[in-house]
Length: 324
Image (cartoon, rainbow, N blue to C red; front, side):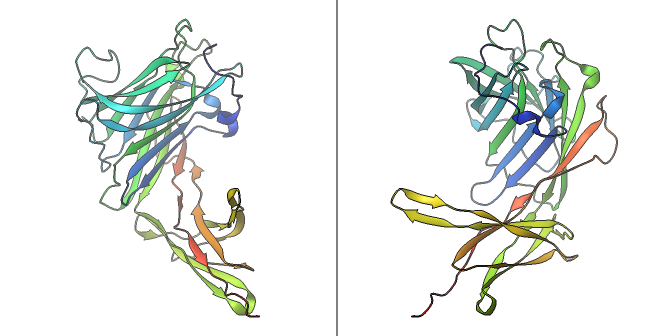
C-alpha cells in the first residue's frame, strides 16, 4: 500500500451504510452519474452494477470511443489515501481480453484507464446484456509492487456522457452487488457480499419561481415537485440564497442556507424569506437513504436504497432601487 499518497482519511467512513446513488441530467448535454460509497464495509474485490431496462448504455462502440470518466477515492487501514481520476473507453472485446472479467459471453468490453504515481492502472469493465438489466462487472486490479493486494476503493464516482434518461416515466431501480475484501486485502469474502440500490424517478422535476412583496420586504418562492410525472407530497425542499459580489480580486461567493419547507399533497410548495437586496435562490431536494423493498440474492442482503435528489434552476428576486 506504500504507493498510495498520504492525503488523510475518514471520508469514506462518514456514512453508516454503503450507498449507491444514480443521477441523470437531460437537456443539451445529457449525462449519467453513478456513485458507490462503501462506508465501513471495506473496499470491494468484486463489483457488479445492474442498469435497469430503459436506460440505454450502448455498450458496443468503436475501439477507442470515449464513454465517460471516473474518480476513485482509495484508502488503506493505515491512513494512506489517494484520489485517482481517469477516462472510460471502449476496447476490443477479444476472447482472450480481460480473462475472468464478467460472465461469458460478454457483449462489450470497456476499460477505465488510471494512473497511480506514474504507473498505468487499468480497470476492465465487462458489459453483458443477456438479461433484462444491463450488467457491468468492474474487475478491480491489484496494486503495482503491493504483493497482490487489491486497489482499496472506498468511493467510486462514474460519469457516462451523452446518455439520456428513459423515455417512459417511472421509478427505475439500479442495483450494485459488492463483494468486500478480507483483512489480507487479497481474499474475497463471498459470503459477505451485499447489495445496495438506487431509485431514480424519471422524469424528476423541481420548478422554482420567485417574486418580491415590497410591503413585507419578502421574497416569495413557489414551485412544484414531480416524481416520475406524479406529484410528490411531504418532501422537504431546501433553499440556498445565492449572493455573488464583483470585487477587484474577482467574484466573491457569499451563498448561505435560506431555510426549508415541505410540499403539499399536490407537490406544490411556498417559501418566504425577508431580503434587503436583489437575491438569487436555488431550491433542492437531498438524496434520501432508506431501507430496501423486496428480497435480495446477495448473501448479506440489501443494505440501503438511495432515492435521487435534484436541484431546481436558479431564480433571481429583484428588489427595486430605493428612490432618493
